[in-house]
Image (tube, rainbow over all chains, first blue to last red; front, side, top):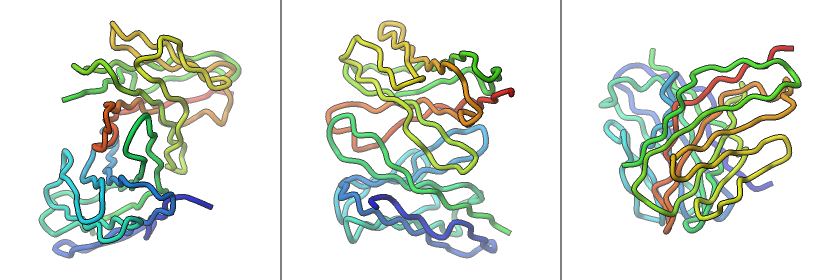
Length: 113
Length: 116
């Protein structure tokens, strides 16, 4: 079935460590996104990408990095520079034009110990 | 920048009753798209309904309908015959047209409780 796969579902990290969250889609979508979700805050955009080897910062990009080496993949690295990384992270994809809805993965829960 | 406001952090409704969730947005664009997403306890985001701003007719999907007031920049969701499975967080979202590759702007959500 077509969809978006995020892994791992749960991740624990010690302070000072970088961690990478995986996101893979087989929907043949050009655009991919990373959102962060905190209680009472809704979803906030971290990074997005329209095309391979190109990506743009969203509203809260500080302390995060991404890559887009393949159309299907858009991994997110949470670096040690991120002050408060404990959160729920959602990856999404969509077509570029028109009223394309975002399709979401099941999310990854990151906890910093 | 566009903003989306959901003024009701939590709503409660009796099973089989009707409930309306509010959403307002701010934009200088004339063409755009609006969405309601549902996030159940599993945390999977599910599209409930979509509205194109250039369409005057309100979108409807089975028990879910919207009241789109473009001049007032209001986009409320009505759920009829509420069911226990409707219990979830509901997010209103905005997307600009013309290739809005910067994704959706979300409100902070409304937690909907269904009383049996």
